[in-house]
Amino acid sequence: MHILKIAAMIIALSLLNAAHADEVASTLSNSEFLHQAEAGVVELTPSTGLAFGTESARAAGGLKRSTIVTPIGVGLAYGFSQMFSADFNLSYGSGSSSTTCDSGYSCNNNHKQKGLYDPSFDLKLRLPVGSGTLRFGAEITTAIEKSKIDSSGDSNNATGGTSVTPFVAYELPLGPGFLGGGVKYDIYKGDRK
Image 1: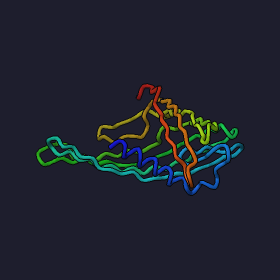
Image 2 (image 1 turned 90 degrees about the vertical axis):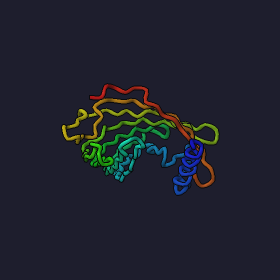
Image 3 (image 1 turned 180 degrees about the vertical axis):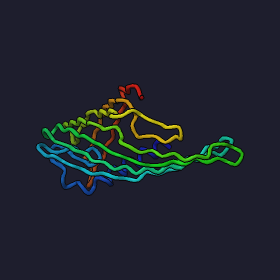
Image 4 (image 1 turned 90 degrees about the horizontal axis):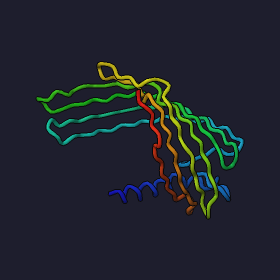
C-alpha cells in the first residue's frame, strides 16, 4: 500500500508541474512543489483552501468524527540569489468538528476551532547536481499565542510552541514535468502550552 501512495505522489508531482516546464532554468529547476523565489524578486501569495474528512472507529460505540476547516493565508517570499530565498507565511483558519456515537454511548458533541496558525519562516537553498537540482533548507514555526481549549471543547489553532523542520529534496526535469522526492523531519519541538 505504501508503494502505491509513493507512486501516486510522484505521478501527481510530475503532472502538477507540467504546466510550468517552460519556466525551468537551464541549470536550476524551479517546480511549484518546491517553489523558490527568483533572485531579487518579492512574491506576495494569497492562499485559501478547504479541508474536510470523516473518521470512524470500529470499537464499541461506533465513534464517528467529521471535520471541516477553511484556512486563509498570505505568504511573502524574497529571492536573495538564484540559490537562496526566504519565505514568511501567516494564516488564519476556522473550522468545526462533530462527533457522534451509537445510541447508549455518551460522546455526541460539536467543537469549533478558529484563530491564527503558527507563523512559519522558511529558508530555502538549491544547488545544481547532475541533471537535476538538490534542494534543502528548514522551516521554523513559532506560536504567537498559547494553545487554548475551553470547557466546551472549542479551541484556537495555535500549538503554543516552536518547531524546527529541516528538509532535503532532489528533483529532475522529466519530459514536461519533474520527478523528485524529499524528506523532512522535526528535529526540534518546543513545549506546547
